[in-house]
Amino acid sequence: MTQLTIAMPKGRIFEEAYEMLLEAGFNLPEEVEMSRKLMIEIPEENISFILAKPMDVPVYVEHGVADIGIAGKDVLLEQRRTVHELLDLKISECYIASAGLPNTTINEIAPRIATKYPNIAMKYYKGIGEQVEIIELNGSIELAPMIGLADRIVDIVSTGRTLKENGLVEYEHIAEVSSRLIANPVSYRMKSDRIQDLVTRLKKCVK
Picture 1 (cartoon, rainbow, N blue to C red):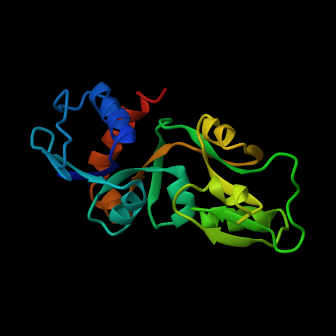
Picture 2 (cartoon, rainbow, N blue to C red):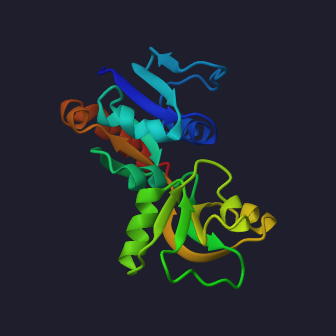
């Protein structure tokens, strides 16, 4: 059986995707001891998992250290890596939206947008004909409008609770997000039978 290396984000996405693999009939342990392990070998299926930060998964897949991976659509839109998108797994569903303080209009002269998704934000505002200044932040994006750093933020929204708790409201729905199965182009060609089998089996488990 061809060896398959799968890059997966740690945490909830790993748990949900692992459940899908079990449901798809892969011979995997019912439970995996995560602890601090960064690699998990499953000799019975000739599969190894690389556990990574969500932003790093497409990097590993593009460079071929992982044959396939599971990455959020937000990461794929932001990074635009050379990978094949094979399947929408419909897990960890959320969306990207713009938000700001209620009843405020966007500044007409170089409005400032705070985000950890500079490429997505720039593309969106360019598409609607707005020239904006992007301020890249990595954490607590909600603070930006509250302290006057930005007119709007562009971020992932799951339940909207964080926005509400910080007195912010949604303005524009930018993109739907869910976890996708991606493949390295060379692996997809060289290991096509193995990868296609995995896709076919997982497809039946997508809800």
